[in-house]
Image 1 (cartoon, rainbow, N blue to C red):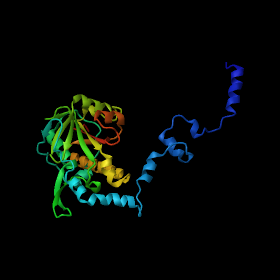
Image 2: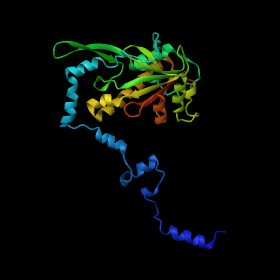
Image 3: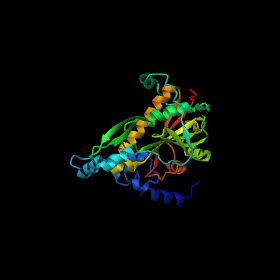
Image 4: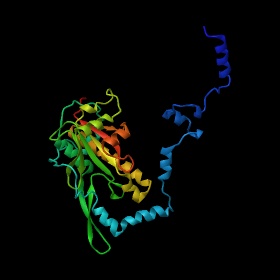
Length: 304
């Protein structure tokens, strides 16, 4: 039986409590709780602050001058050297010819589905080559004239990019691919080659950053994981906070290309962003600000 003195004290304390505690009195704040208390002013709203900070206005002269600076001869020269990869650290591997698509784009759009579960069977390097080229590869070139009449060659890629700056780098974590050792590889678009940047231990560390329960996803059975690495200041140097929007746009375009190409090859893919950021960035030697893991796409032989 509850001691009478304790019972009376409990009643007394409860009589002074508000019926519904304020935001300040809640220690565990879920996203739903935050959404229901947007007007409380008790916590930061950093995502919305980004939306405000990345707006541009009609008379924003700082923005206009920053953009115009990129049309001068020095930046024209710089554009021509983007991702030239004249010096590459690590082993360099040539890619084989790409696998041939089995269907038209319209049919791939119709059939595209997220494939979360994989058989554990390997994919061919030709499939990975197709995904890389059609996501981040060079698709054409054009000449841009400088003030002295000379021309600089620009290189165009498979996806649109804000200002043609291409701030998103493509890396591949090979888990089970015929012709490719387990490890991490960077795709070098100008060379159309793979540059090995990490060994099997690095690949294991990246897989360990996946936070989804095995019942919802089985990354270990995937053939690999594509990682989209953002370099925000490549875009933000020109466009300011607005440039971060362009980085995210490009990441989405690359992921969509990957899904459609995979569908046309009979390969399974799944968007994945529920990774632990610090763990993923550490695995791929990113600082999380000037260079960071934006997104992942799992790829493998679908089991469904």
